[in-house]
Amino acid sequence: MGKKKLKGLHEAMLWEPQKDKRVLCLLCARRCSIPEGQEGLCRVRVNIGGKLYTKTFGKLTAINIDPIEKKPFYHFYPGAKTLSIATFGCNFKCNFCINWKLSQEWIEETEYYSPEEIVKMANEEGCKVIAYTYNEPTMLFEFAYKTGKLAHRYNIKNVFVTNGYMSLEAVKKISRVLDAAVVDVKASLDPEFYRKYMSVPDVQPIYECIKTFQRQRVFLEITNLIIPQIGDKREFNERLAEWIMNELGSDIPYHLLRFTPDYQLLNLPPTPIETLEEMIDDAKRQGLRYVYIGNVPGHEAENTYCFNCGELLIKRHGFNVLENKLVKGRCPSCGFKINVVTD
Ligand code: SF4
Image (cartoon, rainbow, N blue to C red; front, side):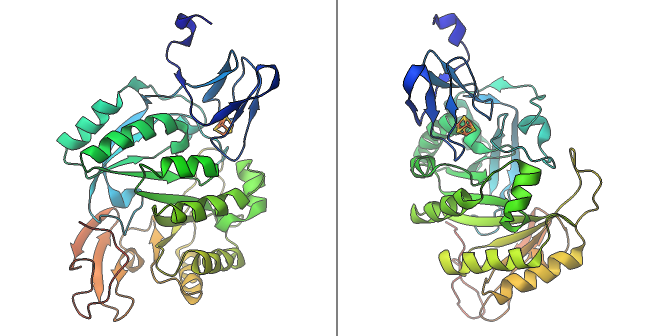
């Protein structure tokens, strides 16, 4: 294969050769076995001449400066400026995706940036964090790895906002440069919902991915998108909260997110706020200490309260931190240590 035909492609990480020039992609739990000349399910990785390449290295569809609360991280450098970048593609097929133009339809323009340019930009703009977000960051894996390594030299942190369907090999590899991850689950990991509305055959890899992130000491927050009528079963939320409590601990921030109709799922209303409030209570009853509401600006469950004495510690409105009273990660009233990462 001549060099000209490989223009714009970058050799992929995490794959192995198979018979007849097929390759096995080890990046996500789909584990696609890809014949020569074809792409994996995500359409991002392609087998050329028995080697796996990625089409997305440095090809960015979005670069924005966001507050870290938009990811949403509530316990990782509260109020930090974040350089958020994305490419195209996804290994899920959610028919309600809010970023469907880049994840499913690939109709956004891309522009090439090098890892050096991204780190320089983050540094010059005073961004504490680079977030790989909007579409599934696994789709930008090689670029994120290289950029992340460089970012650490400038004391800039790296975070993923992921669907959690990464292979364990991928989690272990990226954890060398990753400081924190938000794992976005939907419908409380209801397996039937994942099959029907997201074309995901099995949710078990997501549990394994989350546990492996924690073992690799990546700071974790978990979001759960509640979709009214079809993805709002309270028993599934209770089961998930119980699992987080038992496997990860009571300090993991847990966000219950309000659904707003998008893409092909336009016939449903936004999630009733009462549903989210009931689920917040259910999750707290399971023992979780920091349970938040998302996409409901102005709600009191956007704030962080001291688990010990109830003092209001971080006041938020939407993506903005209005007040942060923490002193070296502790409650100023009773001295209780909160699971918050700060300098
Ligand atoms: S990243 Fe996942 S979906 Fe894409 S080719 Fe690899 S295994 Fe398949």
